[in-house]
Every structure is written in C-alpha cells, then in structure tokens.
Image 1: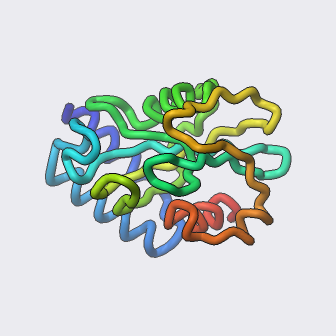
Image 2: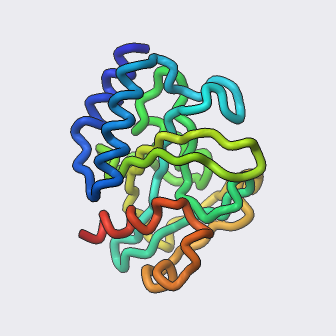
Length: 184
C-alpha cells in the first residue's frame, strides 16, 4: 500500500498549481499523505473521513463543452468519478469510473490530473472530505453514453457560456476554478 501512496504523493508533488488555493490544497494533501497510510474509503459513506477521489471531466475538443452529471447523493452537477479503491492508482480509478458511470472508454483519460481539490462534501449523508484528482477526457458530444441511472438524475453537455451564466452553487465548489485553469 505504501508504494501506491508514494505514487499518489509523486503525482501531487508534480501537479502545477493554478492558483493560491490549489497550492494550499497541494501542501495540505502532501502533509496528509505523509502522515497516514489510510487514504482510501473503506466503508460507505465516509470511513475514513478523508479519502481519495478521481474525477473525470469529459471535454468536447471541438468546442470545449463539458459533460456533467446531476448527482443523486450530492444534489449537484459534478464531473463523473468516484472513490479510489485501496491500492488503486487514481488514474486507473478515473478510467474505471468513467466506464462504470457513463460507459465510456477511459483509455484517453489524461496521463496526469490537471487539478487538485480538498472539499468537504454535501448531500444526503453527513458529509466527509474528498481529496479529488481531476482528470480530463477528450470526448465528442456524439459519443454514445450509458449513464448509471442509480447515481444520476441526468447527464448533459454544457457550453462554456451556459456554465458561466449558471448558478455556481449548483456545481462542485471548485468547478469555476477548474474551468479557469483549463482555459489558461
């Protein structure tokens, strides 16, 4: 397990922070990774209270539209993704989650995460802290989707102008920062 955590530590260390908050999150995560070997969710919904998550953000390379899911438990529009399994590489988690949740081939997921966040979750459970590595998947709007109806109310593509006009409270609290980072 230590080897897997060392791999996560290396990925987080190499991540270029896009702003001061992401730099702060990177330092918090590096401290956390150095202080524990219990970084994987072992019992739903939140044991241990803080654990690793891989998000996958499908982006249409033609126009930059982004595919999000209306998540049942969180009550927010989020990128697809999920918890990293014990000993699993977060990129492998990203590939697995995008296949399980939307039926997409995850082999095109970015080699490294492009964004890192530490977020106290909201939703129907009592909440917990997700340490999220955000990956990008180039994906056309015409790609066939097979959404997991147990996890999502809806799935939809959002144009950048729609995202800018939408209420940010309906999305992951770091989503607008993610958009700024990938637009730079």
